Length: 462
Image (cartoon, rainbow, N blue to C red; front, side, top):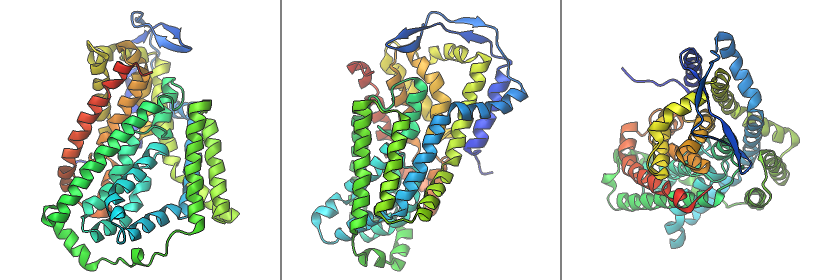
């Protein structure tokens, strides 16, 4: 019998129902809070039991609406970003850039050496800044023939856009869908701590590039080592490279669109770091970017609106996940059991050193990621617990957020991820073959994450 996991909505609503049922069994509890540096923090020695407020069927059904209202700003931002980036996709500038580089590969030794690092960095940057995840799936259809034409294999063609974007997502420094949401819930200034997060992103991206280049060189020398060798031989016999060979290059419009995109990311970084921009400022910047690229690409008003609405529609499921995950927080809070759960978790996370506590948080988040793959959903679900829990065990909230992010390093491998399964189905790679290929890389990510989580305590990262 094939094991099938429920989708995120069923899982979250089931969890919501379980939490509502648990409010009849778990006693109420409360910690006292004090103000420290303008932020409420828990007094770890003040826990006491109080009367609970069990949540019945009516409260269970009302909770998602309350969650939607309480997460309204984040939901609005997600819809805005989805619309704007679909307008960017409509201009075909990113597709043109990829084809341009692919064509140059045959003419330049430097381009041949830089192809994997450049594209992995590009997709990783997408994951780290605007939360590129599902958006990488269509690029698999471009990179598989490119990889085969370069005498690599299907695995390389999948790994460049898919693993690249997922690792960028997991080590993001400006991703509004995980870092932004998690920091907002944890009461940390939006996109603060960007310096160390960028270091983590560079390390993770470099590890990915090094591993992929080693594998690509190995499989180019000995194609039979590829787990997809037989399939690739068949694909090469029917491969049509005309799309790359006949590509005439990027137009001036494409270049201008990409310049606006890069410039907008630069302005966003400046605004966050220097002026403390919040989520509404960044949403306004994205809207300006979307309007600008639409004008440069000469999209009609109807085409622009249609592209924007389609992109926003694609984000509706993400918005509802945020609302449903927030509803779990509403139920726990209204039942007065959040602090009780914190009190129960402390012994499992607490260690002699905050370093080990942070590493335990990462391992817990990795397990949660097996069941819930939405960065926003995980943030909304776990950060109300992990943020205050970090205070109790001597870990900074920035570090707790980083541990939450690193939990998503397992996404490129786990069979419960819709993105992973979808990409592999598109590429025709059985999950078992992909998992065997990914296993050494996952080991590297594990060692990397444990090492990086030791640094914040040593440098006093707040």
